[in-house]
Image 1 (spheres, rainbow, N blue to C red):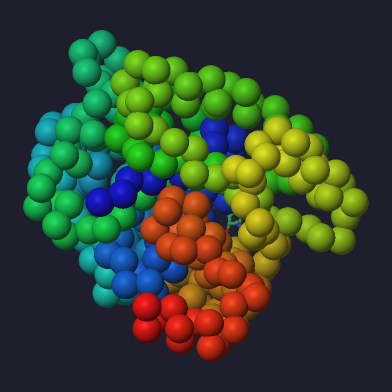
Image 2 (cartoon, rainbow, N blue to C red):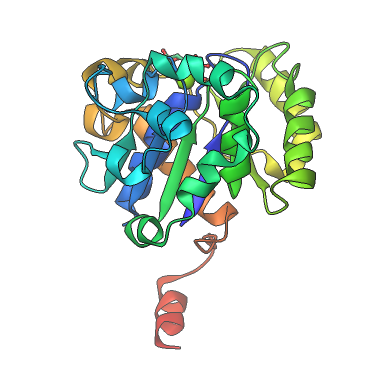
Length: 275
Ligand SMILES: Nc1ncnc2c1ncn2[C@@H]1O[C@H](COP(=O)(O)OP(=O)(O)OP(=O)(O)O)[C@@H](O)[C@H]1O
Ligand SMILES: [Mg+2]
């Protein structure tokens, strides 16, 4: 079971959109995916059509009262996509846990469960736009980090702080943590500024920058209000194409899929299949 934190403390850069649509895209590759909403705004919970209400238990119950994760998992409209919802009560977690020893490792402990590992191939954490206890729990529990970024002026600002926190977590609590990739989101290809900023991001992150660009696409912005992923809402949109491409690149980046060799002829492929 691979654990993925989708994180950037800057608000509105595409974290939730990426978590939901990468998760949905992975199910198309036969993966069983669990989404964890670590944001008190509960945008992801809404995006998968789970209205946050006080009746159902949320991650707050796990983080504060040690409720078993199993009991919090809810199905979504996609067969292999499940969610642990959030609600505004999650905002109180920072304060309640402020003085609790081991507060950063609660999620990791909850995920170290053999039954969960049997049930899911991927667990993805949608992080809030802050670097507090909730994000710390995600980084400590994760194998990989995905950093969505907007290609705009000042978007690299704040990145130093995020990388510092990731480095600290790697050194002190989670040596296995790796940055899988930096994903440019909401790209406006008509402006030179995007190209300039992308160039800057590339010189900063090198191979960590994905080849896939998530373009600005109104269908992506509409999908949450329908409680659906982009693949159900608008399968022929650029948004669906971009996230499908990203899922493939992501699987390659974490070594779960062979990179495609563009020059391979069908005969070569057959010979390989026979081998
Ligand atoms: N590629 C895109 N094209 C158009 N709109 C997009 C795209 N990606 C995301 N959006 C929209 O932009 C807004 C911010 O995206 P999203 O909620 O994914 O960001 P976030 O980083 O999770 O924000 P927050 O920090 O508040 O949690 C949302 O309304 C979303 O629907
Ligand atoms: Mg969000």
